[in-house]
Length: 332
Image 1 (cartoon, rainbow, N blue to C red):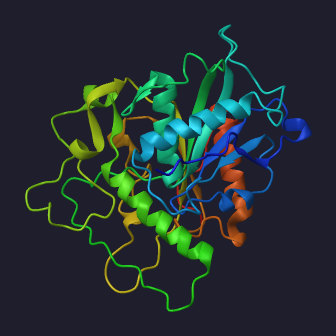
Image 2 (cartoon, rainbow, N blue to C red; image 1 turned 90 degrees about the vertical axis):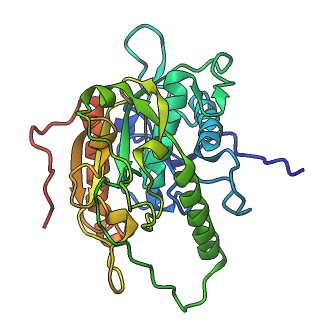
């Protein structure tokens, strides 16, 4: 029997700047490739930024408990970080007298889905694997100020969609060890998303008008990548009325594909909120557009822009964003 050992705390992506000592810290979770490399490409966000990479990246082993198991491990790391020496002592507490630490959760692609699952565990005290075992004894109260989704996509296939998914061209170039590990991590991540059930929202049920977002007759044989029907992708029972408030940082361009078909990441590209209004209307309060496609939005030529958009998202959720009109249209 192999005993898995995990880091006890999150890595420091950016320590708090002098003017960001009292800003709400941001915790960013790895993408499907399993690393936090992209977040280290960001310029200063003027706040403490912590990252969590997949601790099984180098072993290339699956999480038998899927996203719910990852959430439990990652929440434990967050709690340890909050009471650790790297956490800014002037970071804000909740204002309701409970002395809970205020934090922001988020991530790119899979990272946003992990943020949602961790929010479920923290807000409700349980997930698909049962009660939060550390909840009563952790000694760390936490308030989620909001979720920052970075091109995270609602994993439910749009009802009636006839979108054709393309196939990525395999590179003939030799791959380094980390490239191979990232490819394996993405394969495992897609498999976990396929069986993950999002916490159903009461607000979404109240807003339904009889149209269910499920795979229609004849669609079940269509290749849908990590997508499923709403019935497959959400819990049967209502878990919460609404998730914490969210802001979406969305890539402007589609992923170039060889031949016919689109990237699975672009099924909702024309939808302002990448499908999330189907999950819970109004959950994503703002969409901020940034240059690039799903896979290259953190490229060096775009780092200043995506840094600004992530910073804007954090400031908006904190209530300190200074503009009335935030970008929701494509940037040229």
